[in-house]
Length: 127
Image (tube, rainbow, N blue to C red; front, side, top):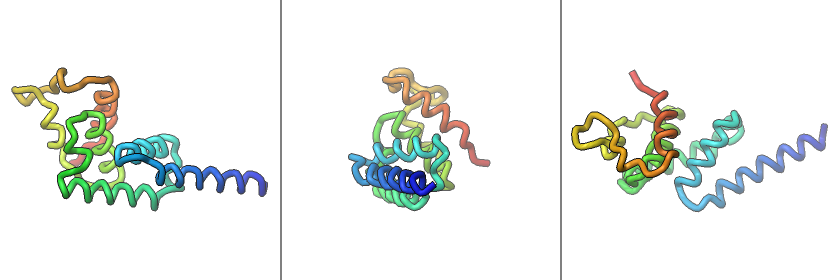
């Protein structure tokens, strides 16, 4: 039993080290997304909160991930902030609409990761 506990602690420390080694904000958001999908976010609530607070600070300075013209980064950021209780407007996706403003522009979606992340983010509507 003690062996399992020490192994679990080592793995937790490894994940905390991954947060420190993440190259940029997008890498940290991807790490948070993977942790949440594994159902382990309760183990890293403090680190997740720190990254999301940093994300909100970047957004207020207009230099954050939602200013990048990348659907994947925008949808991932939107999804994680909504999942963790931050109010963020769906207007962040207006840059990805076509000229009519009614559908997404296919020319702005260069890879499959963007639409997939957008589909996941669409589940997080507010009243």
